[in-house]
Length: 379
Image (cartoon, rainbow, N blue to C red; front, top):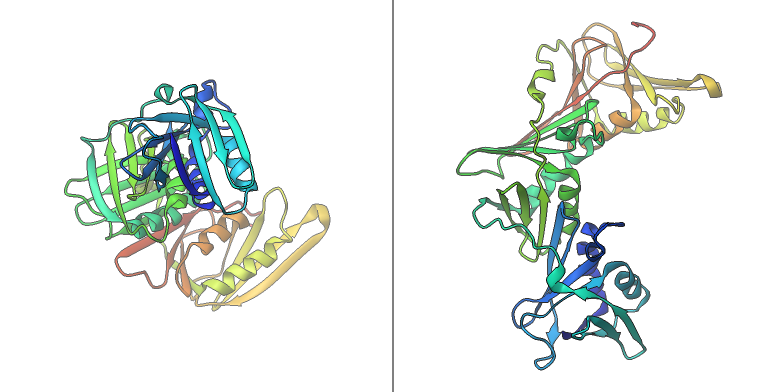
């Protein structure tokens, strides 16, 4: 194989694909990136850890007498990426021979390494008979960005270590929870001819979001054979679906909430961030004291003899109430609200608070849940 390409363009493509390369593997070839020719001027780059795979197309200038149409070679990812990062943006010639020796040549130097036989690289799963959903890259990115923060990292609850997609004929729900907070985003921009449910692993969806470029406007979402694929045209991300039943999230959403707080999202977020600096480093607890048209946010750290308190104007007409939250979770929930005002609905200090934007975006409905922490005032 022999081709010439900009070192910056090759580095960008390899960085995207490199997200699927494992740091350590019992199969050394998995620590490599597969190079193969695809058509007259397209190079296909592939990486996999057997759970997540990324495929990227890159336009290069092949030498007509230097590359067999079926040529494949696996190149060590770390050394290749480190070399390209150390180079300025300049034309680079990639050459490999029948003994899997790889050489990178520029007008300033030459770099050699040994690769692997591309025929030994694991074959990717076939999704030819999978159910396909045509949507936009923007819709997929928003579903991922607004839900992935609540995905569980607890390996003892594997079903929650991904985003639960409920694709319907009219809209789609993206749901994520870790038991402390929950997000449910319903979007009209993603729909299917037949209902479909699946749990996409956290790593796959985050790599898919990172792999998108401004030039990619459409997305084909394929589900089948135990895998989900995000196909953006130039880039494809495949992930093995989580084969576990997702918990009944609807059952934990309180429906009878008689206390409503409406407040400026920016004002509350800024106050929580400041007050949280004085919270316990172990619990990160902040206390919300609700009074008519006034919210007091406070925290204390007994070990460091420090405390903080702020008042924020709001709309609240129910009975006074105090409720505690983990400031990290509360900050993340507020950060994902895309509205000037945010609405909190409460029923009691020991039940979850429901959080929604005061004004929902057109074509979508967002609801978030945050579990309280116990305060001494009602323990």
